[in-house]
Image (cartoon, rainbow, N blue to C red; front, top):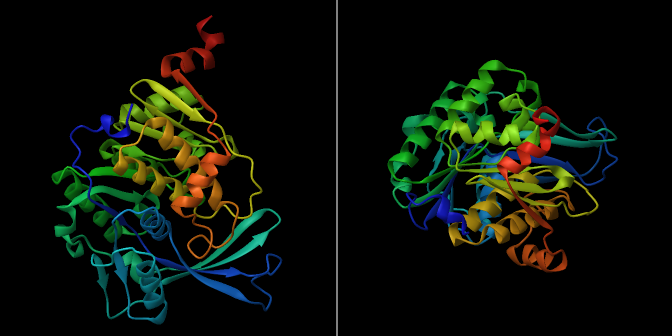
Length: 345
């Protein structure tokens, strides 16, 4: 089965749109350096949507970033950085005021720690009326991360307006819940997520996020609940355990690839961009899950997301050859019976 068989009403190949907020990351060159200490840092454009856009363009897609930047030096750096990687910026709003959000990263024994300076950032102030409606006319995919829904009312309205424009133009809507930890027990957040799920054609949560959104534990129950909300294709990423695609009552899973994990920043965004590439090229489901799995895995082997970690298309294909996919297919009903065999008995 080819991936576009799931979406007969979607428009053909075209521009991939990603809506979001650009950030600038300050990444320590020495992993032992703490933010309280002097040292050398690498400046790299970031933000979930920025990483997705650069990965998509790097995979050969015609990708446009939809967002807002200021006239400050960091905004100029971020915008020129994504443009240099092939991302179209014609749908970016330029403001004379406001500053780009900043994120400072440190590597602790317990994992990554971010310190943000983004309250009131220019990227979070996008208004619905500022969306460039014309770009939706020749688009094929719209992607947005769910954390945008929690920035403020203006960005939230912009997200829903973008989805509305996508639906009017038969543009496939891809949604990554991208839940922030501090909001994972928020009932209002879950309600907004379910609103988006009801409009999405494709969703790409982590298994942990999917369990939080649905309130289910067993994977089969999670998948059933997500499909009931609306999406035709549910993609679950499972860290070292790989990923699975659920569609038309079937569950296709790919085992994880064993690599040394240096920094997982951007792995999920790159995985989602790889999926957009597979949709655009209408590849077989088995090839799609393998390509996405390898793309996300490669990001984890380097630091710096857009700066260094996003792989090229050739690097992903090389990894597919070196690590042939270990796939498993079963029906969703069979998975349900396996997970609930004691209850059924």
